Length: 183
Image (cartoon, rainbow, N blue to C red):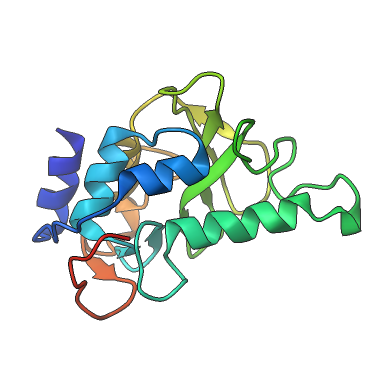
């Protein structure tokens, strides 16, 4: 329902990207939300309304979900700076553990993540933090509902962007059509 609303809101023609979910979820060690997979297959990675970044599949690396997660995990686990985490008080999710996986962001440095727990697969609370690096806000809703509210609900504060009248568009990250091959 919410995925369809995002599609209708943007006037987007779903791409129907073929994805090897077993490989992606195998690397993560947890299943991903079903509605996120629908968004991923329909849009790929890119930018909504010129300001909301969606991580999925991107032939480059800017909006590629797995590439971004691997980099974040590597940085988070690098002991060079001690136990400091960019997502404090949390850590980046590592297979078999509990932590954050970013699936979206904004040009203003807002972050949208799931709190994944390998011991509790199927639970996907969204944690979002505004650009000021303040506390994380928790949302117990689907990825697609959260994304829809960010784009269309001016009262969804502090994350709603509808009041800025940026248009309801989507621009693929790679700028090139996908070839339909599995990731």
